[in-house]
Figure 1 (cartoon, rainbow, N blue to C red):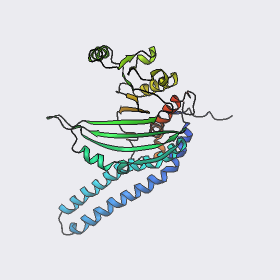
Figure 2: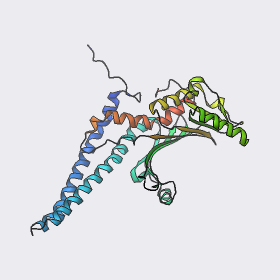
Figure 3: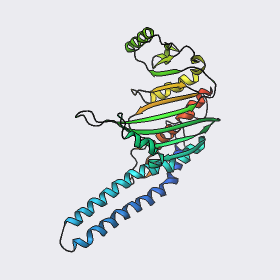
Length: 307
């Protein structure tokens, strides 16, 4: 009798596929773990062993602190390295042309400018870009350190940013924001008084319960907000309930900004085998394929390979 197959994970991928990728990457974790332990131990012995022979405890304590700091740094770097190892195996299946993580993903000029920005500093955790169905896309996850206000603790936010080249021509601008209820009616009144051409549209009862659609008079809203695209956006909103997802069609591109509770693969540890991180790898798979799901929806492929 044949064994029942495992159910697909949240990303729609079979668990066996994710397990195979994690198993192939596990030797990299073991190698990195060995290197990190050897570095920390060697640092402790080099800095602390000699002075300890003289009976002083200051240098051994200082050496231990340095060794612990190196180990903690290795742990943080491992997350970036683990994602960089797994992402090509995932994104390469869907047209990913470039992937970078950690400092390799940072725009140094922008990062330096953010140091003096009143909004705070942004650090790109990782970014991916490529071409799927002949449509360009860009994707990144960022950490934002908000400026400290008075005596309040510094606010730390995590954001996913997606940009997709819209495969059909369109005009105007269409904004999608979370349903605001009474506040939305106040915004409608303000737009009428100010004389702006933008107005809130009623698209579909189900979609309208989740999103407010704001479009100017020249916008191609009916062409862009197809049933397949609306379903893709509802699926994305359902995956991240309660978060302020915003999106926009403008100048030939669709852009999406989604606050997330934490960076993907945040639980990665050198002491945790990759083979025990199927759910985390599935979350990475889902995030890496968000642009592809949107592209399929914009092209009307509701039953594409990522559904």
